[in-house]
Length: 197
Image (cartoon, rainbow, N blue to C red; front, side):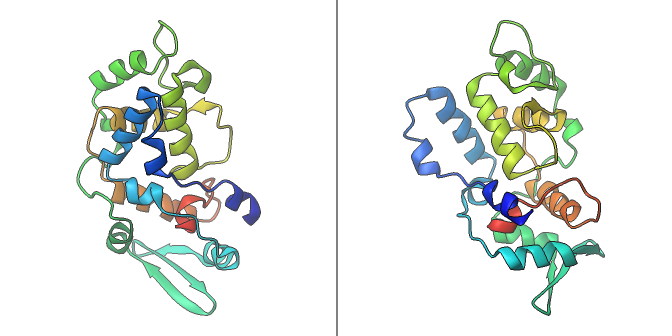
């Protein structure tokens, strides 16, 4: 399992993508920068496979903190420590269902690869290329869950909309919540991005 986690971890070389000739893709990456996720998404992959495996095997959530043992040493990660380590924004929405409905309607038209609106949950082939790419970045770097990557899930659509329309998201809270889910037994979230930065 760990080798599949390693092969699926991703980071973004923002300097390279800003040299693309496709204005839509460049604009999408500029939107990602404005979210405050550049340091998180752009961190280089560093693999300590055995420590990673041990961290998630021993991990749990206690008193709102992620705790684990690696090599006999106790590790405690608080939300504030996590936020500082990745330079994540802490102001904005913590509930994705609060993304303004008028932005969702605009996104359904804007994201569509055809003349008809896409659904909030749709197949990636139904959206424009830059939004397929954004969906993949979110799926593989932030919210990796077991299942198909061919679909744009409701949560991903909401995040894509928030990023595109510059809705402020409390990324520290949301991503720390994902980390807590990752160490929770029987969680369907797989440890990708966090473990490799």
